[in-house]
Length: 245
Image (cartoon, rainbow, N blue to C red; front, side, top):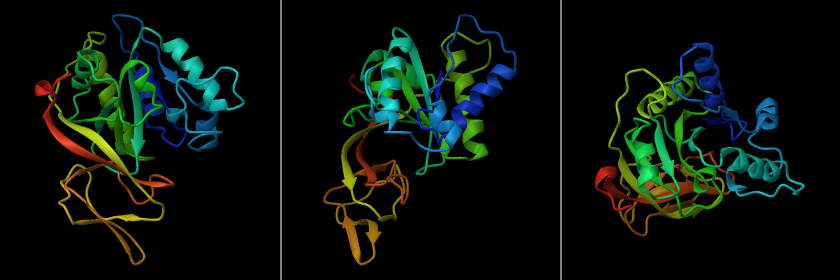
């Protein structure tokens, strides 16, 4: 269980703390990791660079996050990972994978979420280097995100045979990232996971607009979630169980 790759996304740390305080009994050893404690303590996204773009990292780097990335991969080697995040883009939880395999598809189903995004087109993330799935648990800094993270953590443990608790696997709809929308200072005026038609305006900046060259589904798009991009374009693939992996 990994939380706080980004220090400004505390929901995963809260979920881990709540779970450990519950004295729940686990069938096998589970490692709980608060990844970027320095950034979490400072209330910032990162110290030197985005940790979730720093993998595989470099143990000799001057960058705190690059060194941390290398250490994390060593510690997580051979494990299956749930990586908890929160976002500025969407209230409902959704999963992200970077390795397309039967293992990651099965892990995504054990989160219980209704949407999963193949974000393999974006390099550097933790789940591109381990057998794992990331979950965006809701809006940053909200109690709802913390509650979602706690529920998803318990569901993941139960569905993987590690916790004796009720659970329900899902067959999430798969979306595949196909591109990135560059630009700073844009107001996103669409809705994530809702189809944008060709020619439709989906972002504005003063008198400038962004129109869709072709239909797509927005993913992780927001007005203020990123410094230099609006977010990502994707295509809707269909039920995860029917996708070719």
